[in-house]
Length: 345
Ligand code: NAD
Ligand code: LMR
Image (cartoon, rainbow, N blue to C red; front, side):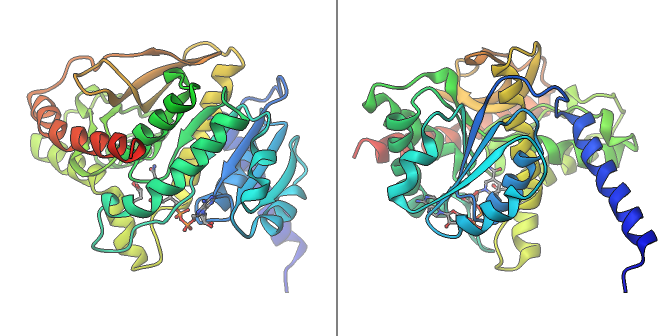
């Protein structure tokens, strides 16, 4: 039997949890009306992400779309006593309504990895899903900021760009590959090794979002810690293999969902803050870029009222990071080209 004292302590733990999110990133002032659409909202990421977006006071309208299962998710989430009005949309015929008027569209739709697979092995299924969803975005909410979570991100972002170009709606400032989970992991792993409180840790992660294309810049990590080269190497490898670590631990039941929902909610919150004119909102993201010779690249990005305000450079790199940068370019280039080719078939 649940005792009232247990309920009280659960309640205060939950309140601490939410206020922790507030401290970490959610603004306390509501601000203007903002519609956020989650495509793939009934999935492993979609459900907890929908919950976290319902907790965000910057959202006034939360639109939950999937091919199935959204009425239940929407009914459930809608009972939470926060600002946004929640509507569930199910099936292709409701996609237009789900997207109309959206300021931010978050896309975690598509299949996840199983052990032994690479993210690129998801291309055949997810490329088509992303293409269809982006075609609808260009029709129903061409000015929305698009947060692409579906893998392989190194290819799905170029696919989205090509779809928008064909529709005449492409604005490179409004398309983002979500790489926040790499940053979240790099911060967690670094804090553990450096033995510092994780709350104050910052680590930029650049490149792309698959294996060696994920390049954490631990030489720029703050607070500074004098970690040995072999520790930095191991931290880099663990960050690059973070997704695989979860896929293997889940043993066939999918990939990261809860940590991804957290990361996706942080990135969407940053986009909303930028739209609302909050100054100095900087996050890493995979965007159209001139930082290297590659057309898309993840680096620090300043977010503003129109999406990307400025793509920031890499800053000084260690020799190890310079090598990592050179090694990732071949794979990243071919993943980008694969996406572009698919979209233009
Ligand atoms: P999941 O299978 O649990 O959920 C996917 C959801 O997408 C399902 O509810 C499914 O019905 C829905 N869906 C399929 N086709 C759709 C369509 N045409 N329109 C709308 N919804 C559709 O998978 P998941 O664990 O939530 O992962 C989703 C994707 O996110 C995968 O591709 C995964 O690799 C990727 N992912 C990316 C990151 C990242 O860091 N960017 C992290 C984790 C997972
Ligand atoms: C992750 O980094 O967790 C995601 O890209 C999912 C995966 O397949 O690893």
